Length: 129
Image 1: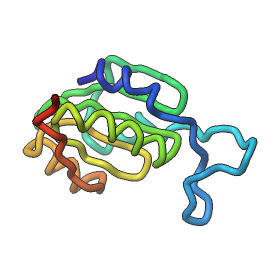
Image 2: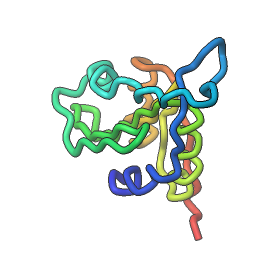
Image 3: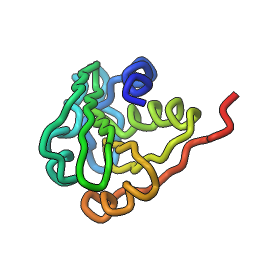
C-alpha cells in the first residue's frame, strides 16, 4: 500500500493553503506545504516513522502501534488529497480521511485513530478490475 501511495503522488496536483474556506490557491501562488506528518504520527501514538517519502505536495510514512500498522499521507491541499484518494480507493482498503491527510489501515485499527485525529472512515472498492 505504501508503494501505491507514492505511485499515486503523480495524481496529486499542487494545492494552496486553505483561505476563508477555499482550497484553491490564487494564481501564481506557491503550493502549500503538506500537513505535518510528524504531528499526525504523534497523535496516532507512533514512536517512529519509517518509509518516509516526499513528493510535491505529498508526505508519506508508515508506523506501528500496539493497535496495528498505519500508512499516513499528508497533503498540501484537500484537492490533492481527493485526487490521491480517487486513485487509491480503487485498490480497496480502509482510509481515515481528514483535512489534508489520510491514514490507511483496517476499519478495526482506524476506529481508535479516528477518536484521536478526527476524520471520516471511507472504504475502498474491493472489486477493482
